[in-house]
Length: 418
Image (tube, rainbow, N blue to C red; front, side):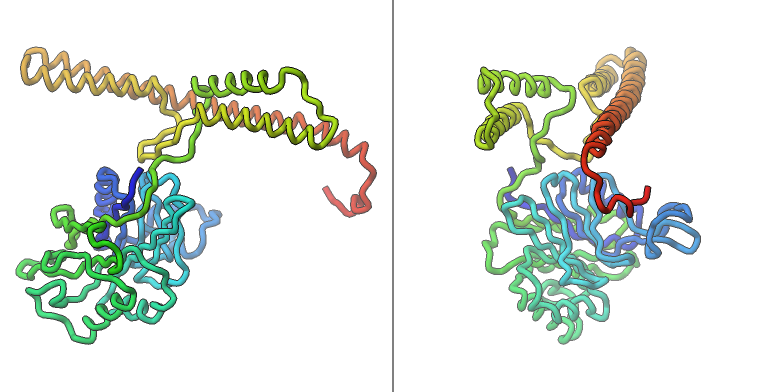
């Protein structure tokens, strides 16, 4: 159970390599939401001419046009060539992701994240403010229509003594528009004043503060945390800003489930059989609607009780695989043990290091072969399952034909063409 949400704001400088690096790093650090400013957009891969891809996603030379994707993240974007996008961690199994249509601009997007059905959505506003103050002026025009915001952040490209005392301020009009907007929205500055967030690539230019994070002023200040991490900026000239905000009680665990062909599935079926024998020692009477309803309710209670006793919540991570089973786990553990023995042998028995290294190679080969075999087995199971389901459908066709033969002809039948 968690009571907070970890959000990152970062300007990626239109670099696909750096964006991938940031998403990898944030996935390893269990970040929940990554808000990117100045994402990379460009051709991703060739697409056939007959593909239903829309014109906005296709270049003239039939290349798929878009931005970075990552298996650990769900990309949320409001338009192509936007200057802000968001990535939501797939670990948030119960989250419902949407965009607020009130904000419709290239330089800002309002992400709504409902972490559990009984909670209100978390509103995250991602902003890129250019040299014309475009995003700030647009948001000021629609401020009365905006919902209550939980966090606002991004690259504001604005200098002011409030957050950067050591740097000369921009025009009073520009700074005043930024401050007036957030005052109108009831927000306070969470970013620490005087801590640089922009580190120019050009030698001789000084560090400044232009990346800002704002949070509601009417909530307990102790529930919010912020950390500016310039060491994580990589190829970008902007620091990575980590923010933690309150989000009520929610969990990363998904809905309870039972793995197919597992021991839990066998126990589930056995529990249903046992409880139905107790509930129906004799065949139930189904002479009336009330008796039928009573029998169905008792059967439902039997199934529901067996499910609650055998189903376990599903945990999502960026390494979740449907085909992974106990044999893969044993092979992986054997590889980890072989690597640990190799490290110990190199430190204490160097003469045996070569034999230990060969054991690591053998364990690696065994893990790869186990994964390949398990993937083939999983695909065979899925194909067999689909074939059986299709066979059941075809088995029902004679009954449907017999029913149509018995039923009186429809007056509309002569208008139906096959």
